[in-house]
Length: 195
Image 1 (cartoon, rainbow, N blue to C red):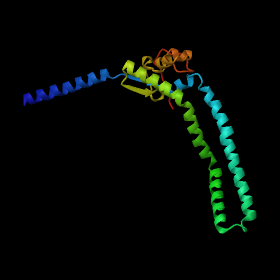
Image 2: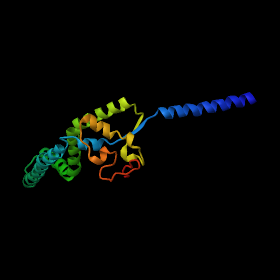
Image 3: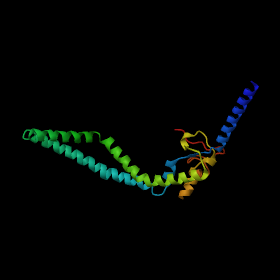
Image 4: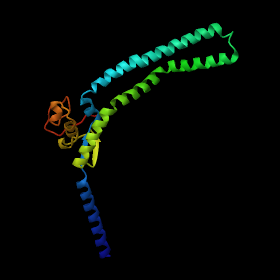
């Protein structure tokens, strides 16, 4: 019986020791991809391009669809009696489709706009993600969290700084000192925003 208790005690001790070794091997860090991308040169042009896309492409498409719906409606009202039943049915279907498009334009435009923005942001995101992955591999981080998801984090595990340096980005002075942008320097560890 003593032998069994001794074996059990040794097994438990080894499990705890093994867990401590695994915990000591894990390296934790935090990162904010959106923040790093916002610092990249040329990313501000995406907003200008998006405004012009929404005005010139989406706005023009909405105006065309609305005008086409009005034209078809007036033609249908004036000539529906003269039209063959099959042609009248096709025209009604086309008008219903245009009406649906115009009525749900906000959702349609938002989807198209998001797709265009993703297309324009892809080169910036790819560059930032590649630099981030290189830093994680070089410094052997096991876990990396989004900065806003942490209550408290030590300055040394802020991967924004080495990723920005790798990309050649200039960080605001507060961020270079390991502080969150817009906050006064503090002697305690960085405390990310809480959403």
